[in-house]
Length: 243
Image 1: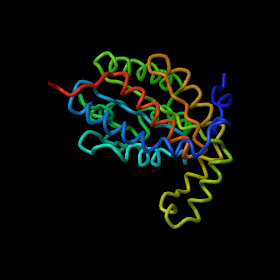
Image 2 (image 1 turned 90 degrees about the vertical axis):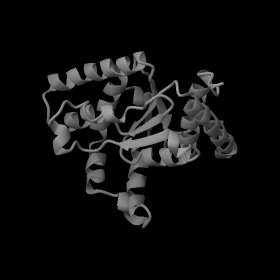
Image 3 (image 1 turned 120 degrees about the vertical axis):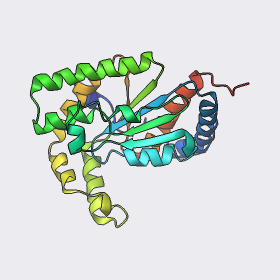
Image 4 (image 1 turned 90 degrees about the horizontal axis):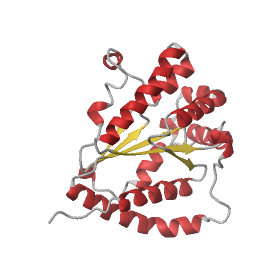
């Protein structure tokens, strides 16, 4: 089942930009307060994973949702094409050094899921080896959770029409042009392949640590959605300052 095609990429009809913007300031205050307690309490490591098509807004989500966080309690890591050194090791080797310690929030801008996505797109690994990676990632995340790490996985869900619009904007806007790469156009032409693989990732790696599929065509709703989910999770931990 193609779950992505059954989920809208835009905000619910009855939810307005004005409503979201009205709440986002209070969300920032809540996130700051909760993160302060998390850091002081030092009992929960938080791992936030952001995945999505090119131009889906991973950088923008980090900038707008987490701008209120104390940098001492938060790290961001972007996983790009593996380096020569990283290729000499198991594909999860480069992930371990960036896992969060207790009291810290670690954000992955792309993640270990790139090591399923790109080899499948590029056909650089045998299918049976890629299939094993699904299993390894499930075991990896299960082990992290067993040791106390809280994992939140967000797939930023945009439409092909919106992606085309954003790629064109990158080419024209002087403030965005630096982000444009020729590979953006190539990836856009492979939309169906990317969508199929992401559907498999969500289906095969979503039981232990479910994915939150974020309608992301409208940036204001994307930011609202992610911030709201993070607040709900942090509030559920009943964080307290140490006595």
